[in-house]
Image (tube, rainbow, N blue to C red; front, top):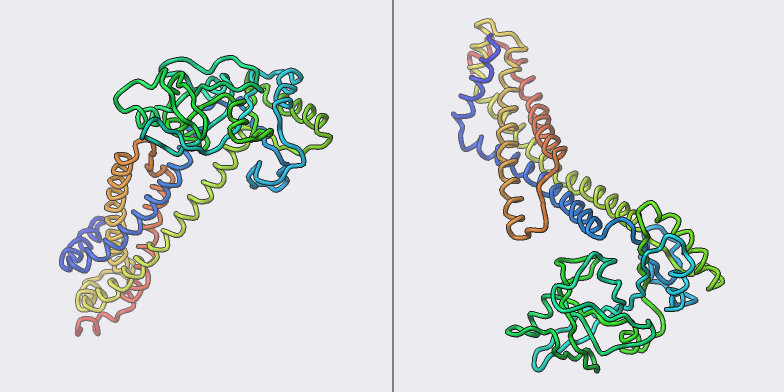
Length: 399
């Protein structure tokens, strides 16, 4: 039997039972689509996280009150014997080598209003160094003034979305807004889009840190943002931070987190999640394989005379086995190709809905999905193919 003959026989047999073949193909296609789409979502989340951290650079250190001893716990969520204070931030700026900027930060939620328009948004208390440290800029107007950190000033910067909501037809620069019970003058608009570490840059108000501590009646900080002069200075800055703050507090009641450590932990979590989702979706390929096996068993029963004729004409057992394995392989490969097209179309639709989120499946997932679908098809065809080879030619000719 020539090499291409099994494929020709298999294709004609599948065309003869179009509905049955289409249903098996659909099962494989759905399984492949699920694997590729879920792995693409996980990979897209990882790429999104990488992009978020790359937009911040790699030389930032975040200092939170409270010691986090358990790996994976959120820093700053537990109780702390001592608060982080403005004096701590000033001591770090003066006493730690390799530090470019120290930004004390207080974060809360408050109503921001102008006349009859009001929005409830995040209010960030910081210094004028907040924007350059977070790689942001002033899109219009000017930055916060240079102030003593303990002093407040009745001024604010607005995110672009918040500015449009409160001032839909006019420029907000120079106008006044009410933040909580305080009346503040708008100095400028924060440039930048999207989220940075959970903070929507476009939908926030930035005020001096002294104003924020008075607004929320607090002495402690939510965190400190420390910018090293370069990525190669981060380890030295962390060591200096720990020494200075431990001496001031008498114990290590704070947590230092670098960007690389946070990004690495998130990548590991997302990679594991991606593999788990792909594994769960691959179960549907096993279900599709059972369907292929059932169809092939029915096909063997229906084509018993054909098998007997082939054996009577001299076809060997291996050649008969190849015929049925070729059918199973064609179903699985065709289903895999259809699933690949469906996954690509779904990923394209998601990119149109969410332009900042790329859900394209990684190359390894495409190769694995197609390989697994082919393996499932072949494995499902083994039992029917073996049953066909065991048929007695004379009995098979009788049907």
